[in-house]
Each structure stands twice: as structure tokens, then as C-alpha cells.
Image 1 (cartoon, helix red, strand yellow):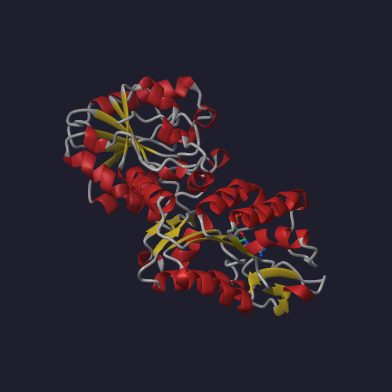
Image 2 (cartoon, protein in one colour):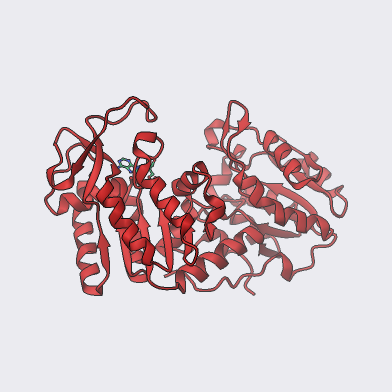
Length: 403
Ligand code: AMP
């Protein structure tokens, strides 16, 4: 199970004045046609940067951006970050990320000045957590601050390895806020506690389902994941997503729910189509609603049907805590976004309920629907939040100095 308290040192527990601080942010933002299309991660990084700068640290920011093979230049992100922080941030981009020139520029920083390195994934050693690169990064720092919640589940040089070669490693505000909230709301929930799980890849979420059954009173399974359960019950699933290798596990979860006296809720109807939309957003695709006892085998189910939505809402209105991870339909296509929208909208309306959106696609959906500010907490981490929900340790947190 996840720890119920965040017990690592943070930037407020140390003196940063005059210190060279290597700050790992998660600035892995989507860039389309040269434009940053979602700046949530940039905005979320601002408080720690401002704190460090105003407290006289010499701040060196680093982050990865995109896949290693794409070698994306992080300079445009530096520019956007500088604007968001209302602070000059000097870009000291080098092909090698760290080299003699970069070391010199960092050592020339004055108290309160901020600089930023090139995309850490320009170095192959980064993802392999090789000591050589970790040491180079450490040579820039008296203190390591990790504020990259979104990448805490990865043990890379800049999120984990570097901490071995720096005297003090602490968490930033984003990490503290994320963990305080996740620990507090999820490990000590107000009840009834309803968890809604969706998405496509059931294999990624086996432990999340298991953990959710331990913690919650009601677990609602939706989206592509639910058809592996339904197949296990002998339903016709047509062209819907089914992971045959996980049917047995799903049936074990059904047994577990029974044993614990928990409710495990599955869809009863769906919005389907006779083919997977191509392109994904195809607005012309024809849809048909089916009772899941009678799904046509030539159809695949891509959204929750009206009865399923009604049923979900019935449990949601009684909840005092709702945790939601994973869309319950192909929400990228407006024809299959209704189920996901209804969950987001209902969560946004429940005033006395703690509402937590567990990162990744559900966070994108809530942002797309412009409902993020109506939630108690929208996690900024995709994979990291998922690991937290599985109860797995997060290397980027484990490596920080204990309080
Ligand atoms: P995951 O990465 O496992 O969290 O899955 C997120 C993806 O699941 C989103 O891109 C959704 O479009 C997709 N998804 C949700 N429901 C379904 C469904 N019924 N069939 C196929 N994909 C789905």
C-alpha cells in the first residue's frame, strides 16, 4: 500500500541561499507545429522555481522532452517557462547537456539567477541511469531538488541517479503537493469511497484494480478494460478490446470483491460501431447503442451506454471521495466521449465530495472539458500516479533525504 505520509525533506527544510541547486522539473509538454499545446506542466513548475530564485539559490533547471530518438530541443520550453515565471531564465543548451562551458556558466550564476540545461534525453545515459551522466549533473549542484512528479516512477540519471552524488536531495512544491494530496485523500478517504477505472490497457492496471478493491467501497470498471471482465462472464464482446490472458485475473478480482463485501460495477450497455474509428477522431462514424446482453458480434464497444452512465452516477452522488483514472470511452472522438464527459461533469458538480483525477488521459479529458478547476485535485503525473495507485515505491521520491 502507498505510504500515508510524505516524510521527505523539501525545499523549505534547507537553506538554499548561495547554493547551486539542480532542479529537475517535468517539462515534457506536447509541442505541435512548434506550439506548446498544453502548458499544465509548465504552470505547475512555477512555484518551486520562484521560491528558489527569491530565496537566493543559483538555480539550474533540467527536464526531459519527448522520446530520446526524437532529440527535441527544449529551448522553446525554456522561453515559455521564463514567461510563466516572469523571470529571466538563461538557456545554456549544449549537445552534451553538461560540458565544460555549461559548468563554467553555472558557476558564474549569481544568487537568485536561473538557467536551464538542454533536454536530458539528448544523453543516452539518462534513461539507463548511468553513473557517468549522474555525476556530470551532480557536478553542477550543491543541492538536488526533484519536482518532477510526472517522472518519479522512473529511475533515470536526472530523477534518481544524481541524488547519489549530491549531499542533499529534497522535494519541490509540486512533489510535496501531489503526495500530500494523494496520500491524504486516498489513504485516509472520506467514505463512501468510489474508484472509477477506465482506459484500454488492463495489463497496466492489474495492481491498481487490486489496490482499489482494498481501499474503496465501490470500484467501477469502464472503458476498454471492462470487456475482459465481461468476456470472463461469458458475454459476447464482439470487436471490443479483450485481453484473453487477463480474464482469469479479472475473475479473481470479482471473487475478491465478493469476499471483501465491496461492489465491483461493470457496464450494462454501450455505444458501439462496426469498426474502430479511423482516424480516431472521425466525426462521421455511425454508432449504435446495445444492451450488453445483446451486443452484435460485428460491433465493438467504444463508450458507456445511457444505463451504464445512470448506474455510475447513482454511486457517484452518494460518494464522499471519488478517485478517477482512465477514460470510459474513446473520448478523443466526440461520438464516444459522452461517458467520460458525464463522469467529469458529475465530479465537477459534487460540492461535498473529494474529487481526484488520477493523471494521464483522464487529466487530459478534464482539461479538454475545461473542468479541471472544479476538481479537488487533478494529478499531473500519468505513469507516476498509476504507480502510486498500485502502491509501488517511486524511485524519484525514495531517493530524497528523509525528514
Ligand atoms: P490507458 O492508456 O490504458 O489509460 O487508456 C487510455 C485510452 O483508452 C484512451 O486513449 C481511450 O481512448 C481508450 N479507451 C477507453 N475506452 C475504450 C474502449 N472502450 N475501447 C478502446 N479504447 C478505449
